[in-house]
Length: 433
Image (cartoon, one colour):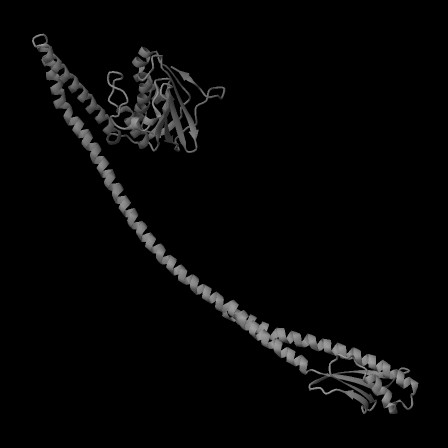
């Protein structure tokens, strides 16, 4: 980069004044040549007037030699014979060096003398020197622009780059530490969740036996002493039996919730049509008693746990049948492909859910109604959420109070997924139960 700047600066310094000098000298020579030719023609007229004695008519020759513009450069105008001797001249005071130009004086095609005109080149050389000085300054400026400024900019850029690299290294170090901390917290959370699930499973399993004993003996007590105790005692025993049974149900539900993670199976290709059919068979009695009408669109094959997906469908359909508003339940199950996932939906015409509780209903043991209105522990939708999240999806609902509800859940599409089944005519199939 340095030598390029030096070469360009040298070219600017040398070429500019040299170009001016050569072009100005060319113009000066052309002007002098033109003036010499004009004066030679004038002198030829004097010669033709007196061919023999014209050399002695110096007054006439000087007369036209001194005819010059008011504003003019200093010149020497000289008439010489064939031997080169000066006949006459008109000379201004000029400073050497002098640039000369000449033209022949002709008489009937014969050369009889010569006109010589000279001008000082001192002004031209002074202007060339001034331009050379300017060119030198311009060359220095060019070198400064091409070398010094980029070098300074490069140094600043390097300094900024070094600062950025240091800052990047610092940020990278901080990010590495943050990632390590995040991985550690993730590992701790995974361990904690596993231990919590194991504890829930063990606790609920170990509580089953003593609770069964309590339930058995309170039930036996109620049967054996029925009618032998006063009304308050029988009522208290009834409370104890009912509480023990409800506790047994809660423990069983907690055990079911913990098994979503602890007793899970590896994912395989699952036919959702078959899974839904199994869930409907499990709900056959509830469907018959309620007079429910259940329809479903074609469902795809997905990667998942068949048992848990069956439980997911059974819980959602069971809720749709349970939370009816006096009319026969009408339930519709559908599925649509959306980007890289399947979006399932279960729509009913039941009592609906207030939108403000749309998140709360998926929490464990959360109920929106009393046990006198609708039975259950409030764990069904929590199990659904845990199953969907284990499959890499999400679950949500859209509903208005008194206008039914639609539960949506997603399952990622995988290599083993199929497109939605078609009928023989190419349209999607709808099945009614």
